[in-house]
Length: 321
Image (cartoon, rainbow, N blue to C red; front, side, top):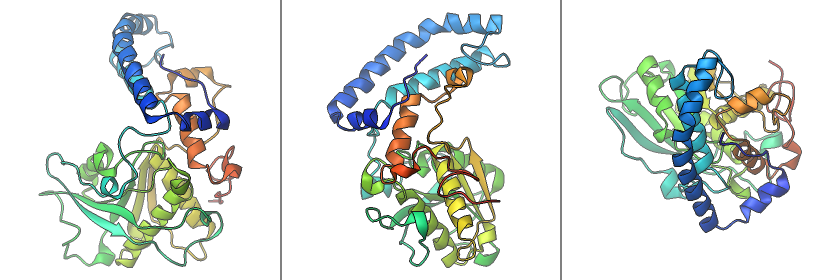
């Protein structure tokens, strides 16, 4: 399987000093290896399915699902060997870009200003200040009203904020299929937040949290009622949603609260290496090296956060529900 070891802080620091050229060569070599290795594993996956063993999946998984999981694991392993995402995720032009959208998808850029007077505790960091955050109103033409021209009173309207997955280090909200799929079901416009990705100390925690809270208050300042706002995130984006809700909850006497949230396979545990559960580790789609790199980079400004679980009951941002 395309797995790697969990890395300590020293190992991650060594990756950070690897040249971009070397990282690109590693990605290329891993991709070539995967192209050769995956076809060779198909007979083994078929045997695993026939015998109902658990190396390539759980007994209930079909041959097709096990094969897709194997291909996905190799793709992730191939494209994420180091600390720099292959696409540009930091420049203003990249964060504000609107790629070619499929079907009836529409989007318009909104640059959210940093909100003042809502920063307390862990969200205050000397090296990371609240900044403008590119966001996108997203809607389906013909199925939904353009949220920028909707004549319905804003206090009666609902909106879903979306935080893209990518281990908090990569991803663009307009390029993920999740938000578009949710709009097909809910007919609710989406406000995609292109939060800062944690690949430098200046964009690590609490940068994404600052962006998320500023975007939430932007909608409130536009007239949306907090209870009509839903926060949704997948993977790393789900971790950002969790952190945001915990922060708002910790200061609920001073800060507004969203009406609901949707977490899709959220990345909330930044330390658990699953050594006590080898079966879960074997079946995990994500490789351990990438997870440990992402968690270390995300908490680089707050080493005291490493080894904490950002969920109710533990961690600096925890609060009872």
